[in-house]
Amino acid sequence: MKIIAVGTIKETYLKEALTEYKKRLSKYTNLEIIEVKDEGLVDKDKALFLEAEKIKKHLSAKDYLITLEIEGEELTSPSFAKKLQSILIENSNITFIIGGSYGLANEIKNMAKLHLSFSKMTFPHQLFRVLLLEQIYRAYKINNNESYHK
Image (cartoon, rainbow, N blue to C red; front, side, top):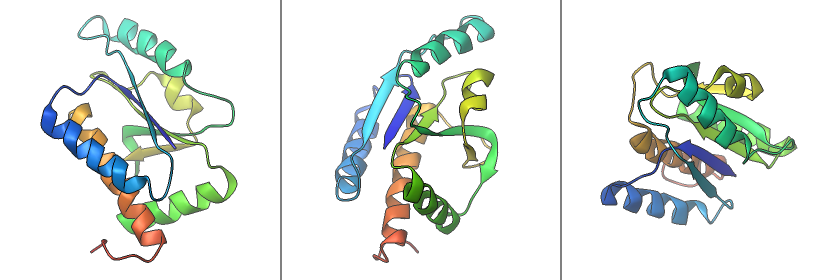
């Protein structure tokens, strides 16, 4: 499993949370987190294009792409767990993509097999990475009938 995220995490408390969830997930899957440089507050189209080029360098044809988008499909935690389980039956190369300040280029969105949204609200992409890892961990706990999910 791979997470490609635009931007880097600087805050210690977020790094610690990511480390904790990565450790918990190691029981279930190999997780690779790839950070690509955020282009900052330059022209939106230019930033989206440059970030897309960096993201594409980390993709392979066998990846099952899931983009995190405000316009994506909203699922409950149990539904997300079920969806993840069904994807894993046919493809173990799941790649989640989290955009930067401007989101994701349409080119990247069009490559995705699943467009996922956690909410119609906007979250800082650094914090969202922690939320994504927590939900992936929760999904594995649900799918293995282990206590955690409430």
